[in-house]
Image 1: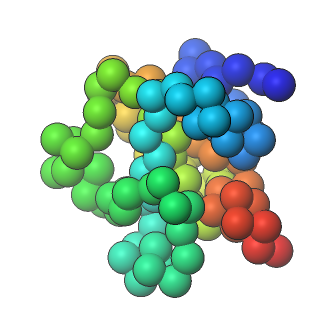
Image 2: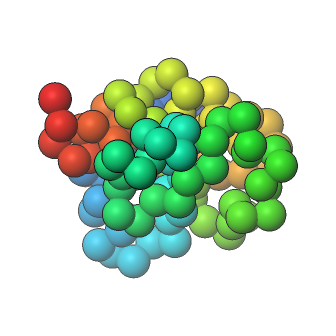
Length: 106
């Protein structure tokens, strides 16, 4: 299983994140979709901070955790969110396949 590595711009596989959570690693999952999208379906462990609100809600993001950014399909908003947080000094990556893959929605 690939370990979560924040040094690259690669996405992190759902299975790797789930394994890390099972091993009680400190991970915070942030869903950057709209409130409506989040309420429709989301990863149970995730909190909702829209991409536009990340900088305003930075106090909700834990510095001592691996941050996993999720959106619907992975790679759009989540990649932008992870890049922004990395620039701000956070250990952040984006989730391959996003919420849809986590929940097995196709």
